[in-house]
Length: 289
Ligand code: FAD
Image (cartoon, rainbow, N blue to C red; front, top):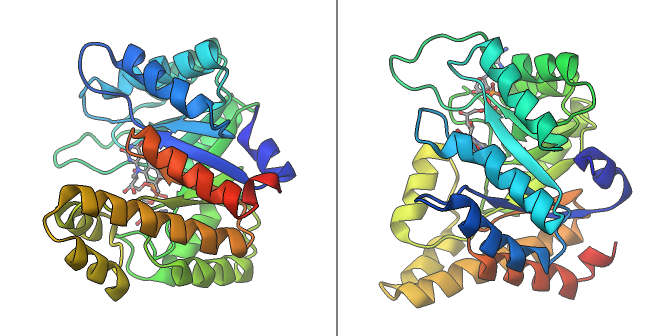
């Protein structure tokens, strides 16, 4: 199934996983995937880690195994910072071989001293994929608060429009903790005539440290109501986990009420998080739409 076709027919529920580290990433991913498969997600996206961590090789392996063994629709992430056209084409050939028709085309974060590569921005990668793999459903990242490196929100919307004009078929958002930011983004995207469907990415907070990292790496605003919950959970890890999942589920209920195109859950390889999101969305009637 191509993701943009699913989005044309229904509001989607999807989950992000990252290739497990260690010796048996595929086996571990399959055991997690079996629990995810019970939730019938519209797609599972598999992250890509550039920079020789080994994780990038596992993106296709994991996406392929989840598709082949469990029948899940998978989307492989792909970054282009510092890469050549040949490297990208080799990755696309692997996807084709594995029967994967969905790719999330990203620039990735630039590493200091990294080679320039053949692609400056994700829009260049999207255009290239559309040219060489026309059957591929190509996704792009979007940022409800603007990308952290971009000087202002309006410019970030202009850059997003470039990705849509380059051929992006669907968008997946960066995590965010305030649904009003989504509403502001939706208005701005409408004004910019961006018609590409958007899957809203929601991630539960798990600790003060994690949320601080998110604030700095993604530029995510932390609303006072989240800070209050972090304070209330104190240094009890179980209470913190529960508070984070509950807050994420409240966000999902709000997004469902807004009639979003898709809800994408950053489940951090925890099937219990995906299950809580699924139960919440089923409970408010979203999954039946
Ligand atoms: P781009 O769209 O190219 O934008 C990058 C920056 O350049 C932005 O500041 C943008 O405003 C600016 N820009 C764009 N076009 C122009 C232009 N023409 N002129 C001037 N400036 C321009 N990273 C990973 O390494 N692996 C992953 O698996 C991964 N998955 C992700 C999934 C999602 C849903 C999201 C939201 C992010 C993910 N990332 C991942 C992080 C992503 O790689 C970073 O956010 C990266 O910094 C930007 O990638 P991009 O594709 O949005 O880049």
